[in-house]
Length: 494
Ligand code: GLN
Image 1 (cartoon, protein in one colour):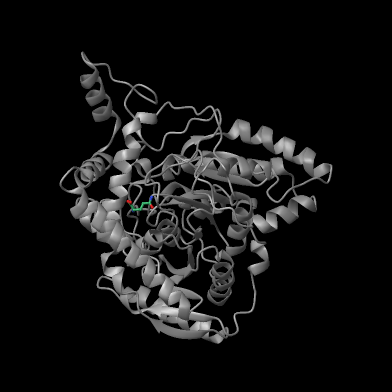
Image 2 (tube, protein in one colour):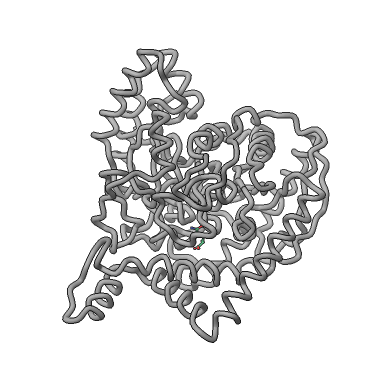
């Protein structure tokens, strides 16, 4: 098997057994990036030279028998995580030359455990989007194709570059961030596993902020076990993030393959929503059958405030974004366009620096926070958010985990849906509620639809119970036996 097709777990044991070196493993990935990134545009910045140096050091560590969990494993890093000395753009013109002088906590944790970073992955500008088409560095192409159709598809967003890179074999795993679905939806569109941990599980320190009360980092990889391995490294308390939660990080890999006998799985009625494609509804039913066969009890539940999820999310997230993005004023960070007065400089800088979607959100956010509208919109949305969270808390009084679709449709083509922002926001209908409630959630690929595209199912768990997600996800994964790979990938490009 080609080195770019291995899982992280298999690569880690292959490295220890001296079947191949870290340099060989990393070079296979940097070669794959050189061959395929011009087409997929999954990376904004590649760091092949630094990665090969780090791989040599990893081989020394392996030779001494001192390898850690991720020693020598090539990973992609979403270009929203600050990486010391490596350009970090948030896919925005306003940060196009920004080189952070420090490392985010999540990436520092991965480096501590020996990971080798092969580059910074593309995303929607400031993580705002669902199709990776708002990047100032151009769209990402999904490595999957519809049967008999050459149309370029979107990889989902905002972590579209991470998802495409992992699916195509340009990284063994990648970091993502998820504010309203940005790990789960691209994972579903690209046929990989993506886990959004509980809000507070991974530090937000050094991750460029979109909506601070929702943003959460998490792993994206080709297996549930690989997500467990990455999360083990990424998670943990950090005193530099005031919303980081100080509770133990359990042994996530131990949850893989755990018996599901007697586990209660809730099926929320509200997720049988309008616009749910028939093939995803069928995949959902199949998932229910698989979990029944694994010994789970299936329970119908109701999350009545789900219908307000999108409307409230698209008030809260823009409100926080308008406040977070006020710091890009041309003075302290990033690009500056000079002007005759200070105000003229601000205006010219922000007009040149931000793309249309980011500007739309700043305007919406500023509006809902403005005097006279604050109570009607922002405060109201926060109250509804409490009700959304209460729905989940009540459901988790009856069940241990929820099973739903991840997205209403499989990946769509570049250009489809993009002229109507509201249509684009509807992609997030199933992912946003768990984000509003802060619950952990994961997408697992469970099959291919009629056009040959991957379909994902979502599991939502109790706060800080990522283990049940991993246990249930691994059961779905083995029942589905999902081994399909996309048309465009490193192995096929040779
Ligand atoms: N698509 C959603 C948005 O545009 C979610 C993005 C995200 O999770 N970062 O806000």
